[in-house]
Length: 148
Image 1 (tube, rainbow, N blue to C red):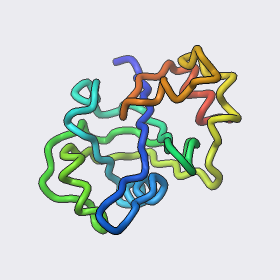
Image 2 (cartoon, rainbow, N blue to C red):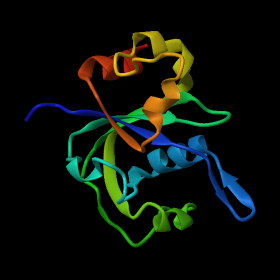
Image 3 (cartoon, rainbow, N blue to C red):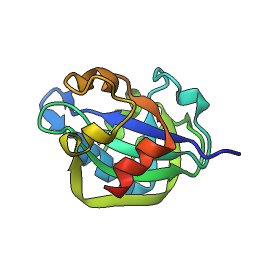
Image 4 (cartoon, one colour):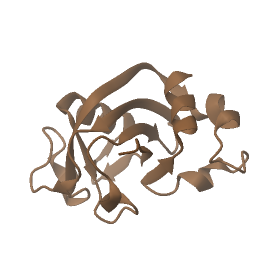
């Protein structure tokens, strides 16, 4: 089977009196060895064990890559949320176990990688390419992100 590459795009999430930042969510999930997906995300049903994924934190105060992982299991419905993030299960009902977890010491700003990413054609308005929660990447773009 051919290796496949994806990017998950996460944002800060606001609850009544609390904001969960994209990095806090991502690091908590990585620490627990799981990732959550929305069942409404395009292409989520195509994900399989072994797919390699980079994490992009989007939105105000973010705009950087912060780690990578591979799927140990394909996304399946789950009724329990991860420790400390139980509220997320209502928004993200699919759960995968993950492996090959890399939590980068320093986030990699999009601005530093933008010129070398082929999937972003309009470099000035790159946010248009990051509006969904999951994006297919070429191996070349994946390597640019993880190896910069």
